[in-house]
Length: 288
Length: 334
Image: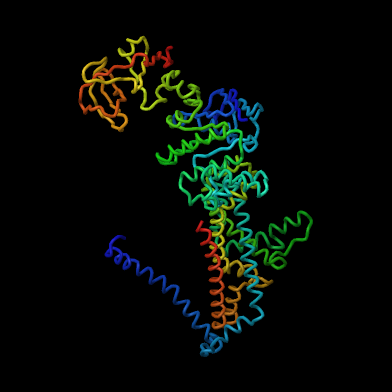
């Protein structure tokens, strides 16, 4: 990319891909913005004209809005805490030399390959079913009353399912980070009189901080949009209606495209606020 | 205090014995250098003393107490690593204070000791920086600072200068020697560079394949190497070895003669040969002479002003008192 000529050639070569990606992003975004300012009811008269900010006001003032924001934050936060805490523990465990390391690592990563819909259905029917589920049998074996997971502990169940899916991702990234830790640093700390827990707190954890922020950032962006897990388990009932799910209900169940689009715009703003926050943290970490 | 005794120490990794039974005594305040070619077990030996590796059999005594089962932190030794092993997310101050913090000293005491160490090592201006913002030599000094503040009974250095450039290496060599003069603490220093060994050590331990070939002061090793290996390893440029007719004359299987103990002349001498490469260093000139009847060129150290050209025929005469004789086991003949 040294000369003026090769630089402009590179630009021309890249243009199709850039234009395609831009269109891919801009067209849906623009359509969402346009619909959000319209009263648009596909089955009840179609496009009924511009209504300004009415949809935005209605979406926020609906009694379902704040609970859905809260649910979203609980699910995202819960999954993040579980995946990062257990991800760190698992990656330390997997970093130890042991017999069958390769196989174990593949097994640990396996849940990530299962489609969200499939894994949610497996959890729902094989583990959490109050009659035939594995947990129900386990509870009965100890003489306890089986828990109706998806109705009594619905939010926790969904956090559990999603965490199971995302734990491999966190583990994988944290494991590679742990492997890049210079063993002489740990030995130096050992010579300096640091017991194992202090070595973890003062050496390993700071070394992992960058990997942790990256896991945090990537997972947050994906977790804000989880949908399939809720759709196939509780369908948004029992307090599991997230913002994403609320938008889906507004568009498809209430057949109100305008209202749903307004919700979509809120979701975009929310995701960006989170992203800016996280970018700042990452930026701060990358400085050092 | 800092007296270390190794008693019949062995170390095996699986079936491979890297250190066969080995005895060594290091006295308080000594500067001991372990020297040997790569893979001779010198770093392993240091790590055994540090406690970072378990001993397969044998006993380590530190200050008269059995330390074989004592964990590294409790042995009272401080180590400087080849990669420095500084904690990258901590400032220089926190790096140096880390062992004190682990020992549970209060903040004021920590600061006092860190400042004192920083002053000794000229790090006062860099205390708030991160290791990543320092040069190689400064990082090296931080690593030494982290070792000093613990006031250990002995310092262990694992090839500490091998990541520095040549000029800085000479500087740091002096600084470490100076530090030893000031602190008078036992130091054990591992290196593969015989120049570092010769310049710094009170006592050199020459190792090969885990076996101690010779222990002695630098000049002892230089003047009376116990065998061919030590003779070839100590001294720069390397000693010349001659066999066959050359050595038969001296009643030995091999004779060795150092480059600086051969005089060279245009006209007359014991051996004759052709000058190959000559390296002019200003103060000295190293001539590589192809002597008739020898496979390897003979290295000769001459004064800086000599004028020999490639292909010149020269005559060499060894200094008869300085010839080392070895038997067919490679051992020195007294």
